[in-house]
Image 1 (cartoon, rainbow, N blue to C red):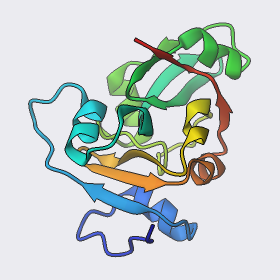
Image 2 (image 1 turned 90 degrees about the vertical axis):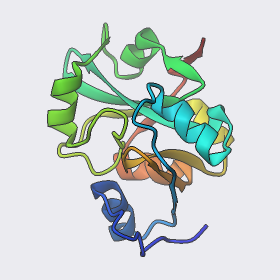
Image 3 (image 1 turned 180 degrees about the vertical axis):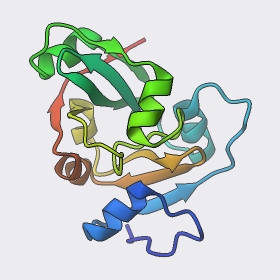
Image 4 (image 1 turned 60 degrees about the vertical axis):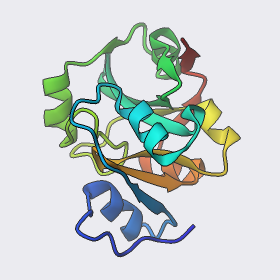
Length: 166
């Protein structure tokens, strides 16, 4: 994996964060289809990567405020498990407009890195099954590939089984 310093105008707050932290990562651009509804699946199909290895960034509300969940695009977020991981009683998906305002990213391009405000982050434990995982670089049509341990370190995340299939 190479540190991608030359992003060809594709620099985002997420890639800046990785570069500043001197983390090895690879950028994977692809042609985003404006009609696509399932952004993670679109990325997986475009890049030829298994759905289990591409992770989506979701934002939910818990009692203490907003929090980030990083789960495989192959499944869904288990809100009860997510809440439990954060020692909260309940969790609910956050309003998209609020999420965009707080993270600084648009839905479909939300990265767990480089958000305007650092939010508590939980990464699904399945990420640790891979040497590298893919996640949004901060805009639709651009994925970052890096070690899950680096993502966890930079976001100060905890890992827990928060994903569910189906």
